[in-house]
Structures are given as structure tokens and as C-alpha cells.
Image 1: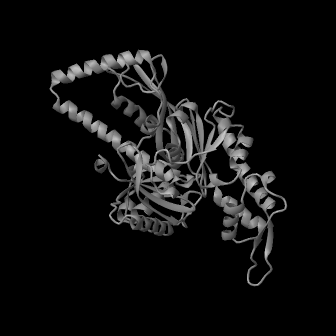
Image 2: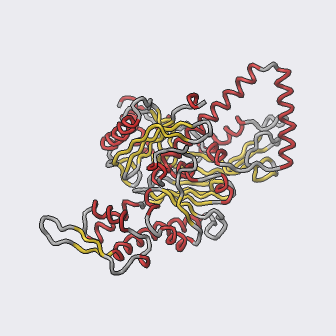
Image 3: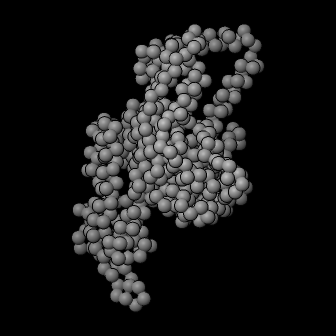
Length: 455
């Protein structure tokens, strides 16, 4: 069975690193990592590709390192994450009146409802990236997770729409395609990270995923099994490094090293009488830096990021203890000492670090269980979800073509009875798979323009 599963590649184009991970599901449904490469990122700032040439080189270096880990690896198509402060979200409502009221609601009608949302007015220069249904209504029945199989005259839904800047999307397209790859789908980074670190129980309890990257902090808020809100906060670990560099008068590499080795998100927890010695430049005297001063600089920026998180939670009315799952911190910046305590203090919610290891097969590379690879592994999971959905659709079509009509009708009648019975017994549980299913794919062609073909 393992060999039947496709190899899916996630490409995370970040501000500080570009990572390429190739994975395949084993017979237990866990990801086996069969290729891994990373490179330093130079052409990306705040999650946006600014220098295409530098980004192409970095992607190619990450791919070369991935091939070095497994020379027989075929990499043609990739799932790519998208972030940046140009990302915005809005809530909409859509309804359709059904003409064929004698029959049950079909998938094609839901697809029409979703596709209608792409006509929503958005500012010039922006493009819709994702349209995610939240909950459906059929006539007077509210809060239906999946209306297929229901009967009614009017079907509607609330939608969460995610938009991004056309040029920013085009720059990602060009960078990946000029590096010799084809983009299978663009996925919002907070949704990819959420898929990697969140289980079904988290989705049910309600959580906020806070992915602290190099240039941005990505936020995804889930409540009652529904994606309630997404946001991209334009600050991340790189901002903390620059704050340390400017505040303490050191080199950027020294600032990064101090942040990782001695940094703390709480100044009160740092020892007042501990100092770091930095070698002087070109014969100058060595510099003594207080660990407490270092922690004060980190705390100031981290508090600002968490204030943004608290603001977004308040915007959607979830700033109190309604999120039973609390906050899941992930991304490279989540590894700062005492960050959990600071998060709990600022937001008033419980917090924990989210590691992407619950979907990984045993015996994986230890490095990949770090929070900084959550987005990349989430992209692979999104790819697998798309593959499994297509396979299921193909099998259903194949069965309908090959099974004799009398048997097919009997089967469908049995399924209808079973569906009707189960509908009266219980409401379907929201699962991680249903959340991934709701993320619409295949939008990449919309972002291509005629000039891309010539380049």
C-alpha cells in the first residue's frame, strides 16, 4: 500500500528560511519523510517575495539539499505556503434557491454556492485565495456542518474569505516556476500550520494557532469546529533580532545567537547579575551585555505581538475563556524561553507549544519535529487530503459506472435510509479532515497572467 501512495512535497518560503520536505503516508496513515532540504532565505521580507532572483536561488539550494538527502526523489509539483501582511480576511453570507426541490442537496449545489463567493467585491489589486464555508443553513435549520443529503428549498452558508495582493501572489508563482517547479496549490500558512499541530480534539475544544515565523506571526482561530478568523501580524522573530541589534549595538548574527542561547520573553525571570561577553570588533574592547536587558528587549516586542493576538481574539468575541483548547504556539519563534507564561499573561488563555510530530511516522528526522517545520508538514497534509478526496470521487464514479443499475439503486436506497437514521441520531463531528476539505483548492491558474507564459 505504501508504494501506491504518492510523494507530496511542501515548500515553505519564509523570511529566514526556505524548506522543502517530501513525504509519503505509510499504512498507518502517518507521514514518512523521504526527503528534506533547507536554505537561508534572502529575497523575502515579512513573508513577501521582494527579490525574485534571490528567492529562486534559495529555492534551488533547498531543492539541491533535498535531492542530496534522497537522490532518487522525483520533485515536480509542490504545495506552497503564502503569508505576508497583505493577507486579509472577511466574512460573507451566500444563499441559493434550489430548482430541483424533489431531490436531496448534491455536492454540485454546494460547489455553486462556494463559487458564487468568488464574485464578492474586494479592493482593486487584491485576489481571493480561499473561500471556506463555516456553517450551512437549509430552510429554517441552522448550524448544519454538511448539508449534502438534506432536502429543502433554500440552502445557504456563512463564509470566511481570505484575500491577498495579486502582485505578491504573482511573485511567489514566478519564483517557484523559474526554479523549475509547478505549484499544485497555494495554501494560507496559518491553515497549513494548524493542520500540522492540531488534532480533532483541539478543533472541537476551540483553539487559536499562533505561528511565530521569521517575518510574520500567523493566526488562525477555531471555535465549535469552525475557522472563525485568520490574520497575519507583520512582526516575527526577525524583528526581535533587529531590536536586539539596534538596542545593544551588536552585529545581527550576534543578536540572533544571543536571542537563541540566552533570550527570554520575561525580563523578571532573567538573572540581574548575569552578563554575556561579546568580542570587540577590530581590536576594540569586549562588550558586556546584561541578560536582563536582553530579556527586556525581547519582552517588549513579544508583548506587542501578543497584544495583536488578544486584539484579534476580541474582534471575534473569543477573548474570554470560551476557547477551551487555549493557544497553541508554533513556528521557530515559539521556542523562546518563558513565552508560554507571557502569552498566558497577555491573553488570559492557557498556552502550549505545538509540535508537528503527531502526524509523523516513528523514526523521523528529529529536526523535523521542531515547531519551525509546522507549515511545511501541514502543506504535505493538505496535499494528501486533496489526493484522498480525488481518489474517493473517482472510486464513487467508477462504482456507479460498473455496478448494475438495480444493485446501485438498492445500494443508494440503503444509504439514504442509513443517512436519514443517522441524521436523526447525531450531528456529524467536526474533524481536522472536514476542516481541510473546506479549504478550496485549484486556484493557482487564476493568478497567472499572459506575461508569465513568456517568462
